[in-house]
Length: 47
Image: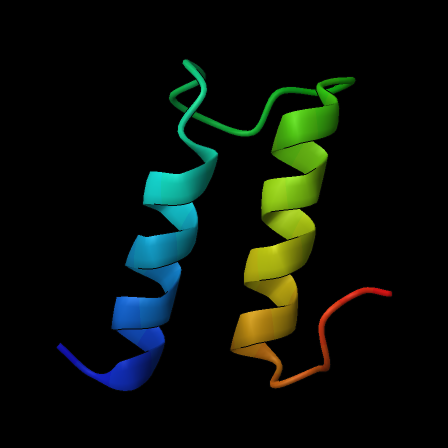
């Protein structure tokens, strides 16, 4: 497992909250997506 795969697995485990996929209108899903997007695109964490 490479560093990005590890990082995404950590994000997924931390944000696990019951939805199998991204759910429109769920603040936790949106926050998880944002963190994963930033990890994939090597962007700094949100302020």
